[in-house]
Image (cartoon, rainbow, N blue to C red):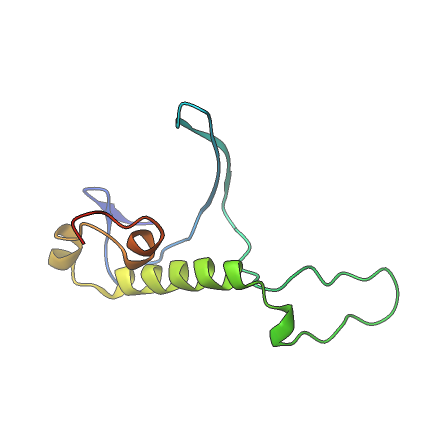
Length: 105
């Protein structure tokens, strides 16, 4: 990723990284693993030992995965489309404020 002042330059390649974190009882976050190709799969595991794989439908969608991952991708694409001056002025993302709203919103 091409970076300027720790901000991505719009129109340049980007990558979504997956971070596996452990939060201890003191609320300190520990990085366990960084995934360079995190799964964006939104379906429940449908692996079968024998036969053809099951056709997936709406009932097979994990709503939590759909909610989190669709917003992650939307925020990422929207960030890449922003002009550089708007990125510098950016203070938050829609998905983070929905998961952890502040008292100021």
